[in-house]
Image (cartoon, rainbow, N blue to C red; front, side):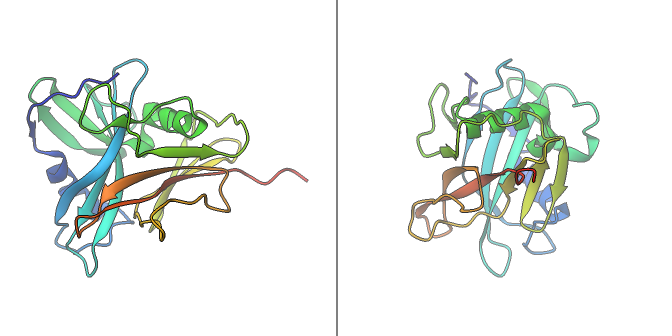
Length: 221
C-alpha cells in the first residue's frame, strides 16, 4: 500500500495543473488560465511500490460555467523514458525529493492498474489516507474479462482521452466529469465496463458520476 506523507510540495499539484491544463484540448476554462480547487479523487497502488498513481478531480471556476476535470497523474523519482510530451512538471516533495509528474494516461504503470481496477483485480485507495480503501469508487465489467494490460495508443479529444489496446479495446477516460442525473452512476449502454467515483461540486454537495468507460471492439463477422 502507498504511504501518504504529510509534507509539502513546491510547486503544488494545483499550481502545476494551472500551467498545464490550458494546453489540453479538453480544457474549457478561461484563456488566461483556470481557477482550480481540489474536489476529490482516488489512488491506485503500484505493485512494485515505485510509482505514485492518483486520479485527481479538480474543479475550475474560470469559465462561463463551472467544470470538473479528471486528471490522472503519476509521480516518479526519475524521468519516464519517452514520455517527455506527457510531463506535467516537476515538484519538490518534502520527504521524497524531486518528483516528475506525468499525465498518467501515458504512463504504462498507471494504465495497467486502471485496467486491473476495471477487471476487479486492483482496489481503489483513499486519496489522502494510507492503507484505506475508497468505498466511493465503484467498477463494473460485463463478463469475466480479461481486460488488456497495455493500451499504447493515446488520443485526446475535446471531452476525453482514449487509450487503445492492440486488439481494439478502448479505455475512455472522461476528462470533463458530469454528475449522474439521479445521483447514482448508471452503466453506459455502449460500454463493457466502467469506473465511477465521487467529488465535491462547486456548491459544496458531494456528487457521483462515471469516470472511465471500457469499450470493446465488435466481434469479427
